[in-house]
Amino acid sequence: MDEALYTVLPENGTLCCDDFHYDPNKPKIKTILWNHYDWFVEMHSIGKLRSCVLDNIQKIMLCNTFYLGFDVFECPNCENEMVFCRKCHSRFCTSCGVKYQKLLAIKAETMCVDTPHRHFVFTIPEEYRILFRKDRKALNLLFVAARNTVCKIVNENLYRKEKRKRAKTGKLHNDKDNYYLYRNFDSANDFGMIASIHTFGRDLKWNCHIHALVPELIYDPVKDCIKHFHYFNFTSLRKTWQYELNRLMLDFFGQKFRPYMNRSYIDQDKGFYVYARYNKEDQSPNPNKKYSKDIAGCVSYMMRYASRPAMAESRLISYDRKTDIVKWYYNDHKTEKRIDVTEPAIELLKKMIIHIPDDGFRTVRYYGFYHPKKKKRLERIYELSGKEKKASRDKRARENERRQKLRKLRLRTAVCDTFNRDILLCKCGFILKYADTYNPLEGKSNDRQYRQECIDEVYKMWIPRIPPGKRSPHPS
Image (cartoon, rainbow, N blue to C red; front, side):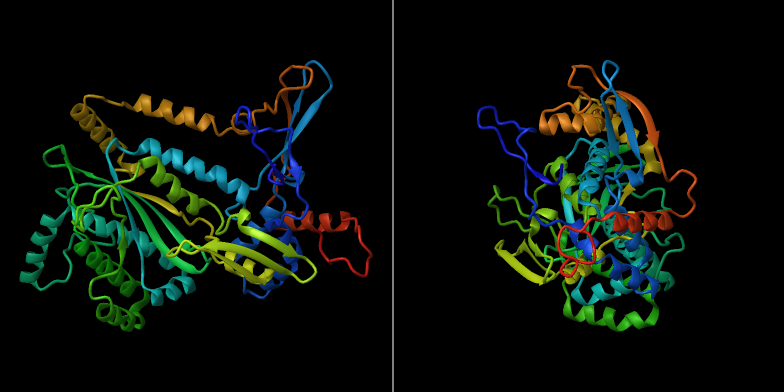
């Protein structure tokens, strides 16, 4: 499916599944990986490559093959059968990442309260980036600092009150404070936040930053009511983001981080940059008035880069196997002009694999009343919001909406919506029925060794179609 180029029918505007044109010269990331797989194995053997990178590369190389298992469907009328190979579900796979992005977007979209949401981007100085590159565990600090920043903004009165207490006692922090700011305060206003981390820019450089979706609504647990929170002081937002990030990084890295911190307060005296777009339709000169994009658009943008590889396969222009040179492009973020890049293929792979997250690292996180442990509070906010708008959306209605959207992501439904074709419809007119499943990973204790054996088997089955003296040492 991903190897075909589809056309649009001019008469009805739908996709024609029978009018595919295969382009053998179309470059693919999997082809480049096959030609450089030995380099990854060698780097991993000497300890210069993370294990999660090798695992993800092995998975994408075997994606949509019978090595990962398959399901068999048979026709009840004739002897026709169809085999569906399983996907790799890798974070480096362009095909599997699309579905994973849609799953995350549906989960977040159906969870959001029916109120305008504010989209923020928390950035860090360029000299900080190398620190997060060397120690990837520090990436958790970006989430916590962004969460603490929003929590302080919505609890400004509580912050001033506790600051006065600390000034009298001489303590830097309140005894109730910990890693998460104001988490142990029962009187603190509760907020909602969906955050995702992006570690790359359009040019594939290491540039970690946080995207946050915050509803313009807070919950007062003392009065048991909701309040609309439209105003965000961006001057305070930038300085608080700077202070919280520096405080957490100083505790994490120790005194070796202090020169970085002192320099940041001198060079960035207005705080670290927090990006929020202006309302293009509103020409008012108020710099603090930002606009809220629609929830679906914000969520889709956030999840797209949190679940897919650093670069889409469509950005590859050409790949020459003989010279091992690849051409790709990106649109500059400031000028929006296309920039073509020509470089060795191994250099492109190096830029892409540094953005593969470690095993178990969650690129999307939920805070405040969007946290899974605060479902009861979120239900209460739904009730109060429904009474205010006189249009309640109970838990059952939201669950039905979520199921309907997830049902569209099933293989059969997704192919029908995309290519206008039912993959389970036999030529005789009957619907194929499930028959059997093959799962080669069942009972396997070492998946990496099994995948390596499968890759070696592919090498053995490769039939060269060019003279032996000129062929590449790997299959394409």
